[in-house]
Image (cartoon, rainbow, N blue to C red):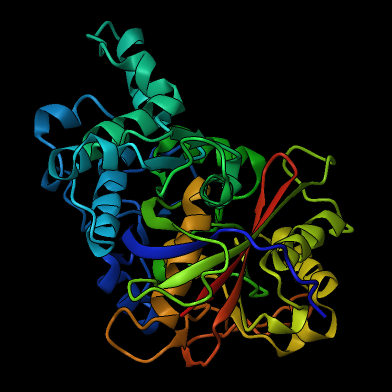
Length: 434
């Protein structure tokens, strides 16, 4: 049985936004998930030193739709993506942007922002390093863009948010941890605690140097899929026996979180979901490999469930980390079994990385937004579990229900979102959809 929690503030989700390889805007993203649409494609320009031939990029996104061309030259690629996702989420939540101009400084002081990013402005930094070595003019903004926290400030400035402006960078867990931090701030009774937080997960560095580094770690798919006669969209295949590594992705996914006072048991009209619980642990084992026993990953999931006041049996669906590496997928399966026991076999789940690749630090926010979009039917359809596409040959070591191939209808309302990260980190979120 779940242990009753002390009365405390809760956290409602009132807006979501998406700039994704398989759909720009939340409705297109939701439709892409339902249809099992892949955003993975062959890389048109590829350095011959890099074996990886695929990526998941947001080709349908026009950065000039949110920033002037002059401003775009001053920021890394993730900034316009994050700005677009934040504006969409804020519009859904009924928040004007910039907040200060429309609602006054008092309201703007009640709203903060947390950016979750793994690579941050690494693309901008690499471009400036190249300019230096080839005697080209460097940007005045090289240092500010190389500091992740300044990117959060860039977003707060453009959105008119005077509350805390924070950045979390914990590898793949970055945006999961950003959501967890925002929830803790909203639950707090400290002076100046926010009324609302805008949280965005964003990463965008699909480029030669990053691909080469990932190849050295042995985590990217490097098979020549075109030579093998296969479509590039099929190469991100979590839990499939043929998987050989992940596809590097990019994108931005945003949420508006609002404080709900202790004892306010009723859902507000604008609430899409509630962030119920958060758990974070560290294996303290290895910088890029999870501990084989997966005890700490399982503990993070159990902590999220406990924080939400749920029992294990309350979990109705899982959004897996599911990167498509041989080791990760099998170990995550083990962790879910440890965390949920026999109930694990009865829960449908999936990995949306089969459709969007691995957007690094943005993946946790992507998974939360995906499950809210799916269970709320934000593409104007009934609730569904997104599929794990390309799962055609099940791996005996990965023997749970990953919703292979096609989305399925569901009446699930409570979801566990799992995340594993370089640096031996584990993060989990418990989300209840209205």
